[in-house]
Image (cartoon, rainbow, N blue to C red):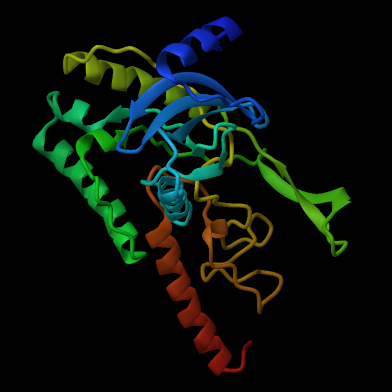
Length: 300
C-alpha cells in the first residue's frame, strides 16, 4: 500500500495549507503532525536511509533572521543531548523558500495528556512522572532549561529486552580498511523471533490499555526499529570467566591483554529495557578501583 501523497494532492494541499516544499532534499512529505509556537512538525520519509522521520519547519521567516537562529539553536541544543528520553536530531537545513528545518527521529507512542485521561493507576502515573523528571534532570545537568514542558509534549512508547544470540557477532572485514590501513569492523546482526514476538505483544497490550481507557485509536504499529538504532549499543566484548566464550573478566579487563580495560557498554551480555548508563558508570568505577590497586602492586 502506497502511503505517499501524489503530486496533484501535494500541490492542492500546499496551496490550501501552505505546506513546505521539500524538493531538492532527501525527504518526502507524508503528513501533518503538530504545530508549536514557531514551527510545525510533519512526518516525512528519508529516501536515503529509507526510514520515517519527523521534521520541524519554521512557520515563517523574518527579515533579520532571528527566528531562523532560534530554531537552529533549538536543533543544536537537542543534538547535544543524548538521552533515551530526548528525541535525537538527525539533520538540519534550509528549504527553497528560505525557511529552516531540522529532522528528528519519528517517535511511535502516545502523548502523556492522552494517557492521563485514561485509567492509569497512581503507581503508573508516578512511574511516568519519575521518567520525565530523570530526563529533565539530565537536561538541567547540561545547563539546559525546558520552558515548554507539558503533557502534550511528552510521548510514551514501549521498550523491551534484546536477548544475546551467538549468531550475532562482529569480526574484521577482510577487504575494507580505514584511512590508517586498519581493517574495519564488520557487523553480523539481526533480531530474533523473541524480539519480533515481544514487539507484537507490546502493540496488543498498548491497544488493550488505550481501548479500556476510551481512546479512539487511529494508528497501531509494531514495527521494530532498525538494529543498532538505540542510543546505547551494548555487547561485542562480553564479560565472563571463561576466555573461550568471553572477552573480559569481571573487572572488564581483557583476558588476553592484561593492560586493556573496556569500561563502556561492550561488556554487557544483553540489552535490557532499562537505561544502562548508571550500570555502565558503576562497573567503570569498580574497574578503575581494581586497575589502581593492581597498578600500585606492580601487576600492570
